[in-house]
Image (tube, rainbow, N blue to C red):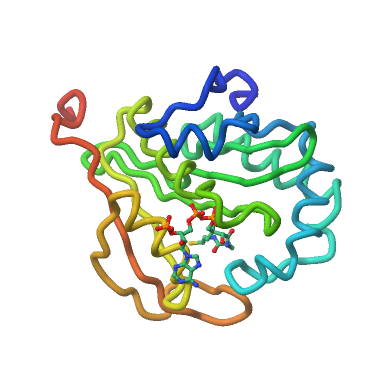
Length: 202
Ligand SMILES: CC(C)(COP(=O)(O)OP(=O)(O)OC[C@H]1O[C@@H](n2cnc3c(N)ncnc32)[C@H](O)[C@@H]1OP(=O)(O)O)[C@@H](O)C(=O)NCCC(=O)NCCS
């Protein structure tokens, strides 16, 4: 139940005017079990929009039952401190999704971000604002670094990351099985601070 226990933002944290403007009309909060049907219809609505950038999906994935299963698995990861999972909503409709995945502690203190924006809402700064929000969440969790990977031809996502202060630091050949084949990933990171990494490791 950790996702529901997390406090959603009262307003919209972020560093600039543009950040709050882009998200101001919506609710940004942790994913809940009750979002299964809304997520199913968002994935159905955006099937073509997302197909190039995502793993192959089963028919079940586009149903409320399938999404309930996905959310429950994700909540387990949230409970174990491995994931931080957020939705941007317009009423009951999902406008965008943001995950901080693969949260690693110790000497790394890092997470990997993933996001998408409903096709009807792109081009209005929502992804940029969500990436800023991810940096805010990383700060709350005491992380030192965010990383992200994009497909080589995902120039829009690359623009979002570069604008949010991420630096491109490499290319990982054939790293991810996306849209049915192993594809190269352009690797980005943003270092958040230079403070020490918590208590010394025993
Ligand atoms: C990538 C995605 C999240 C961007 O969402 P968005 O809310 O439209 O992004 P923003 O409006 O914050 O920013 C888009 C930026 O790309 C720029 N852009 C748009 N089309 C572009 C193009 N064809 N070439 C280069 N830049 C482009 C915009 O001008 C904007 O940059 P700016 O802020 O400097 O003007 C959205 O298109 C999406 O969901 N894509 C499918 C899933 C996906 O790719 N997820 C990321 C996986 S790494």
